[in-house]
Image (cartoon, rainbow, N blue to C red; front, top):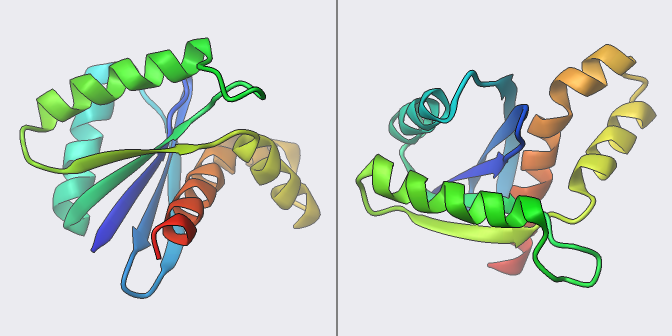
Length: 138
């Protein structure tokens, strides 16, 4: 079972591909999209290319676990995505509180420069989201 992890942002989106049988995940990429339509087309292509049957989207809840403005945006995006991909793929949410911060810290610890951290932290955050999903669904 292949999993597509998404770290959704208004400027950058991170993707990671996970595999539930091996319980492993690899970072795929971070990318800027001009608009939501372009993003959804990319997701459709990834679904086909990687034979994805589960999508996991990070949900940035507030520290008290209440909905944030961004988590509501992500829930709306997921509804549109579900409608637009037009196939039965389960969309799950994982609390992604502080994953971008953690991804940036990991990259700093690996001596990545600021430009590389800014360009790639969302892909690593997506990996952390998939890792969390895999741990919770063993």
